[in-house]
Amino acid sequence: MIDEILLKKIPLKECERILVKDLCNLLSDNYIVDKILSEGYKIIYYHDVDIYRYQYETSYREKAEKLFLLANEECYIPWDIKQDYFILEVSLGDIFKNLDVEVLKEIEREYYDVIYEKSSKLKRKLDFDETCAFILKSVFQVDVALINSLKDLVKNLLKLYYRGNELPHVLRRYIKKSLNNVNEKDVERILKGKESFFDFLQEQWRIFLESFGGDLRKPMVDFEDPDIRVYIDNLFKEGYLNPVRYEYKTGMPEFVKAGIISDYRETVRKELDEALNKINGRIENIKGYKDWLEIAKVLGEIIYLSCLLDTREYRPLSDRINEKFKNWLMENYGKLPFLSFISSPVMVHHVQHYIVNVLRREEKDKVILIVFDGMSEFNWCIIKNFLKERSFLLEDKACFAWIPTITSVSRQALFSGEIPVSFKDTLFSTDHDEKRFKKFYVEHGYKESEIAYLRGIKTFKEEALLESVRSGTKIIGIVADIIDIYGHQEFFDYKGLYHRIEFFLKNGFLAEFLEEAGKSGYEIFITSDHGNISTVGQGSIKEGVVLDTLSNRIAVYQTKYGDFGDLLREKKVIEWKGDGLPEEFKYVICDGNYSFMKDGESAISHGGIALEEVVVPFARIIN
Image (cartoon, rainbow, N blue to C red):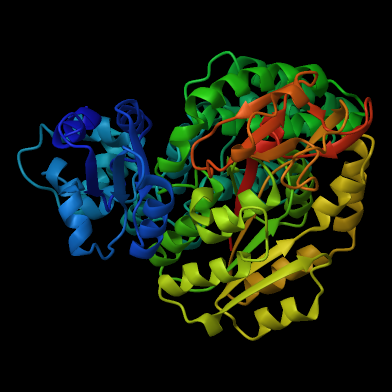
């Protein structure tokens, strides 16, 4: 509906050069991006005239390319570019005549169709508060007028979050403001987000169990209420809540057994079985990129639980998933760079843009970004559970790395906020990360003296790192390479890597650093540049490669030297032709879980297109 309205405004059939000012990310939608690409256009983000001119001169001047420039922020467009392009602007106000667009800017793009349909029946324009109330009721089925107690709020949010919906920040603020007769502290905690809500429920569950043993404290949540009780089994089965160690007592209702640990190994086995059932259901019903993000998280959990049980049930599952994932990537990867990152980064080059939006929206100005080089969802599971045990509250999401999943490509994209073709002169180097990281934040209003970039962090006790926090440096970018070091040292399997990461965490320095940074007023984000996978060697390749130290999963050749297929015909490989990469190179990636190592040799590696390498964690610590 919205897509067709927008596409009618864009002369795709009539013009070969189009520049669209889209400050609300309306065109950052899978269907629209697909339509633009299917018409033969190359999509280019336009935000800096010098970067555009460099890209144009080096990649497009000599070609008869149809170009589609997408400007998602206010920027300077010189006269000569205006003469070369058909220019138009699209905005929320043009489409949603009866709603406050400031509310809509914070709403996920996927809800716009239903909002448009419902709002078309309105007789007048709604103000900010009325728009919030309207969207809550018509889209999220939450009627604030009917919430008169903490119990009502819990029931509404439980239904909402269990359906898989996320409540946008702007609507949570509105609910908080609207509830006058409920304890403000409790409401604030519950409304911080999905993770905070279930953390509250987890705490209340323990109080509920202990109340049967004579504890005088009473839970604020009535788990015996039929509207809540109906969810209990599934909340524990699906991992929203974790069972706790407690002895089942006579007189306790039967349903509480779902949330009690009687045997640790049996509980872990049940969790693994539930995760396997969940992922088997998901991989047969892929609808979009978000399904793959969820599958990657569950697969990471399966590998983690398998390590606890000393089993390798993930191996055939990984092979089956990655065959499907490979086919999906071939069709859809080129669209991902242009999708909306309003609610969360879709790819790693969106991370800095998303963080800047968060700081502006929440009126904050201090941030720490920790990039664990080479951290997969499995590795993150180990760290995440460690932090949760120490009472850290996490907003846990994921995004796509750049392929090839090597540090120099994906990490440059992450720190610069640019796609790889924008830094093709330094594609195989990490020496420019600091310069590009600082440039990004200077362009967004910070002074260079307010920005710090620290690499080679291993213990989180480094003096330069602690001094940056204590001095109040506003923007701190951190490269922690401990996981990448461990991964490249691990020549067996995931279990060895699991023990190394666990040993690192037990020194407590990471937790101490995060605690100090949180108390110092920093918003803390944790992510990775690429993941890793357990591989088997199929023989090395050296001749003709640009660099033979990039990764054991990829060989890169210069296109001008011809086709190197004769060198690779005996190997299980694919040629990666993903958009966004410099065309001067040819990227040959190992298929499946193979690597360019000695035949039969096992190792943890990266550089390929396996789900474990491509989908990486993106988390925020909630203060």
